[in-house]
Length: 253
Image (cartoon, rainbow, N blue to C red):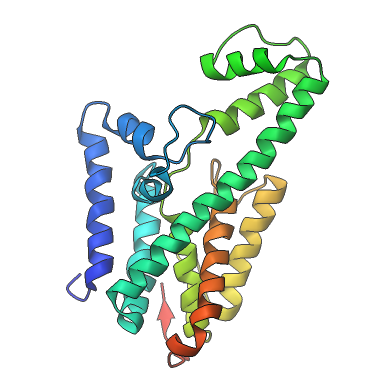
């Protein structure tokens, strides 16, 4: 911990403080999620600041551990390369961008599901009442009922976690150190970053499109893709000024 850089240490401390507060305060996690998680814009909980605050909330020990492990492992390297101000700008742009991408995907999904329900004979006003109340008279048709549940899931499930920003950090690391050896914690087979990171993104994209995920349920895969995309675009923009030396054999785990 003594070799942590300033910005990474600050982000780590902020995430841990909020996570512990959610555990110790009565109703703390629920209140933090209501205020700080990123909700679908039609939900009354939504607020613009959630595009930033969702990055500091996590759903469990495993969630925060893996995000903070990645932040410390890769973020401190980028911060030493760029300095704290530039690293923080990059980190927050990736995290906010991930939020926008996830909202865009959710908006498309919400509207497609809503159109299917209207085509099945449900009135928009009735759908709105079911969403806001969270209960009511449900349709008897199993397929229509399943569609309604999917719609409610988009409406009422907020996004939390720093993963979008972390994926941007991973992409930046891959740009700067493409030959660095990386390995998943539970699959310790080292692979060059230029292959490892695109492979990880391909798994996320597959999970987002098909719904089959190796990362577990309730994962915002398109937020991961969004953070990585913003990171990629920023690295293209900054490439001439921020390209660093290649690390050929160092292994990060």
